[in-house]
Image 1 (tube, rainbow, N blue to C red):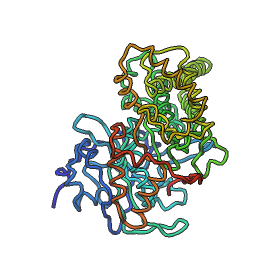
Image 2 (image 1 turned 180 degrees about the vertical axis):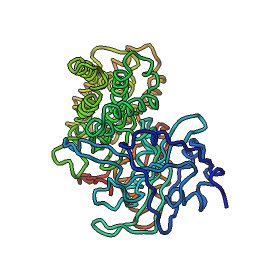
Image 3 (image 1 turned 90 degrees about the vertical axis):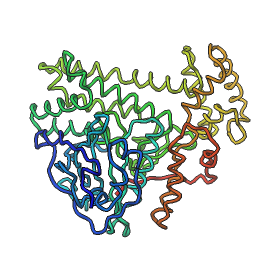
Length: 487
C-alpha cells in the first residue's frame, strides 16, 4: 500500500473559499473498474507527482474519482455563457475540481476530473464522457503545449469499465485536466447575472490575486484586470491563427481569464488554406470559422467588460467609457501579435511598412491555389517545392521574388533567418486524419501504439527531423472533415 503523500499531492482549495454562488461541493461518482490508459509522466513530474506511484492502483483510484486526495474539497463550478450568441445558465455538467496542486515551483494548478459523473449542472446528462473525445483532448491539448500555445493540459485518461449510451454504446473514460484555473468569461457573466456586486467583486479580486497580482497595485485594479485579459486573449488568438488552429466553439464559457485555450470539442487544424474553414458539425452558419476567430475574441471580451462595469467606476457612463476604450485596443493588440508572428514565419527579423501586404498576398495565393497551410510555410523554410501547389504559379513566382528581396534587406545571415523560420513553422501538426487514425486504433482495437508514436512526434514540432516527414503528408481525398462536440 502507498499513501497519498508518497504520490506527491499538495492540494489547496482557494476557489472553494469564494461565495457559494460559484460552486457546489460534491464528490465524483465512483466507477466499476478503473484502468489507466494514457499517462503524462512529464507533466506529472512538473506538478510534483511521483509518476510511478500515481500509476499504481491507489493512484489510478484517485484519477478515476473513486478516492479523493488529501485536503481535497471537490466541487463543480458554476458559470454562464453565450453559446453561439445565445445567453444561458451553465456549469460543470460532468467535471469535478479536486483542488489546486501547488507545484515545486510554487505555481497553483487546477486538477479537474472530466467525465466524473452528474452534477447539479448536468441538464439531464449522465455526467460521463466517451473514451474517444477524452483521448482527442489529450492529443490536441498536449500538441498545443508543444507548439508553445497556452493551453489546459492532460495528465491522464482512465477508462471506467462502464459504457455510456450516445447514438450507440461507447466505452466511458475520465480525463484528468490541469489548468492555470478554470475561471471563464462565463464565470463573470454568471456573477453579473445572478450574483450581488459583492460576489462579483470577490470573483474579480480572486482572479487578480491568482492571475494578475500586479493589477492589485494599480489605481483601478479592475480596469487593469480587463486590460490584462484583453492582452492575453489577443496574443492567444493570434497564435491560433498563425498555426491554423480552429477552436470550433468559441462560446464565452470557453474563454479563460488566464489566456489558456480550453475545451477541445469540435476543434481541428487547417490543412488546405481557406479562411472560411469550419470543422464543427453544429456551426452551420460559420460563426466560429477561421477568419472569424479574432473578431469573436473581441466580441467575447466585450461581454467580459460588461460584467465588470459595476467595478470599473461608480458612475455608469464613466464605467462604460473605460470599458469601451479598453475593448477598442483589442484589434490593434491582436494585429500586433499576428503580424509579428507572420514576420517570423517568413523570416523577417525587422519591420517594413509593406510586410502586411506580403503576408496577405501569400495567403490569397494559398487560398486561390488550395495550398496546404502548414506545408507552404515549410516549403518556404526549407526551399523544397516538389509537392507545393504554388510552385508552378506565375503569381507565386513574382511573390517569391518580392519575398527574397525583402529578406535581403536585413542585417542577419541566411542561417539566422532559417532558424527563425524553423522556430516559427512547425514541422508537424496534429493533422486531422492522423488524429482520427490514432483514435480509431485506440478506441476500436485497443491499440495505443499508433497514438504513442504520434504523441512522440508531436512532442517536438519545431525539431525539423526526418521522423516528422511521414506526418507531413496530406490525404488525397477531398472529403470535408467534420468534428463533433465531445460527449
